[in-house]
Length: 207
Image 1 (cartoon, one colour):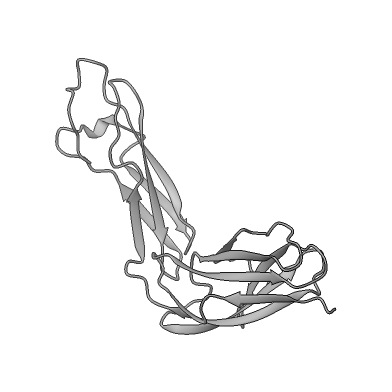
Image 2: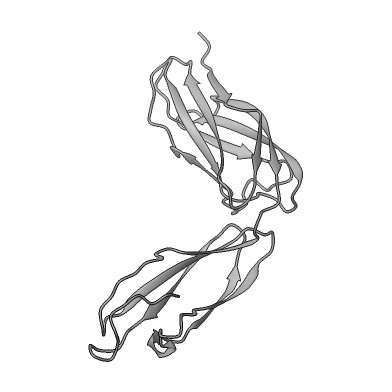
């Protein structure tokens, strides 16, 4: 009996728009006579296999050892565009490889259509509602994502309504991200400290 593995992709064509979830599913079946654990590797023409660009991830990263005839389901999540330029198509080569025997693998291809992002720069306030007490330091974390193809420098300004005193903001209301790489979100935290009890009214302060 010849050992082999079968790789099946859910689709032969997928679209990806930065800022929106992109993924596809793959199944790997072990038709060998031994137990094997498999992982997926994806290659693109012209992209260095040793590139440090983490444009996709798989779940699971590595499948547990499966007996002959067993199938593992993978989900491939796409986090960013692997190459510059939008509105073009890339041919992806997907390989399922046995860790214990790299000569045991299967290959399939699919087409990835890259679409331009709706917004190249996105800011998310991770906790839109926070609660604190006079004298307490309140953290307000934000997430900044760059969906363009270029490195950005980003200036952030914390602005509150009139009754929210700017002096409550520790270390100032302005922060800067000097290098925000495409597909690599960064987190910034503003700290607010209302004055001791009796100097700040209880209420809702918008920002």
